[in-house]
Amino acid sequence: MNEIPQITAQQLRQRLESGEDLVLIDVREDEEVAFGMIPGAQHIPMGEIPQHAEDEQLPKDTEIIFICRSGARSQRVCEYLQQFGYTTSNLSGGMIDWNEAADA
Image 1 (cartoon, rainbow, N blue to C red):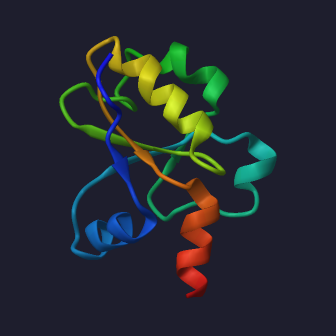
Image 2 (image 1 turned 90 degrees about the vertical axis):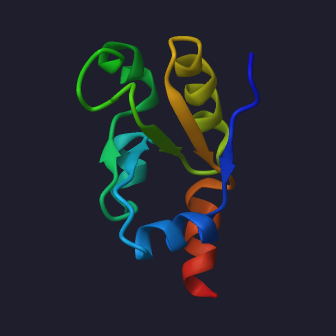
Image 3 (image 1 turned 45 degrees about the horizontal axis):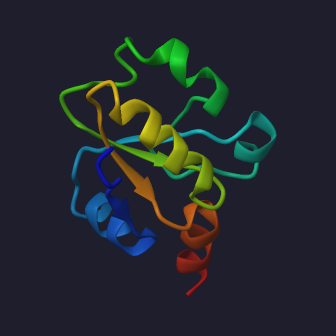
């Protein structure tokens, strides 16, 4: 299995601010996303990813950046989808780092 590319909160902010059109998928549970999501992200709980593997929310022809609370669940989703030919990146540190970077 290939190494999963990691993206930091700062790198993601820079890409979003530059206007890059990114596919962001937040795999946290409903009660977690109630506290906020990255603007533009779509919500698909981790347990529902297999059902979405062939729909337009998860395009195979573009990079998909996965997000969770700390980066562990999104890492597992990246590893899972990579075996089916998806191009994935993991938000290293997840929403914890994203929110800390916003406060800095």
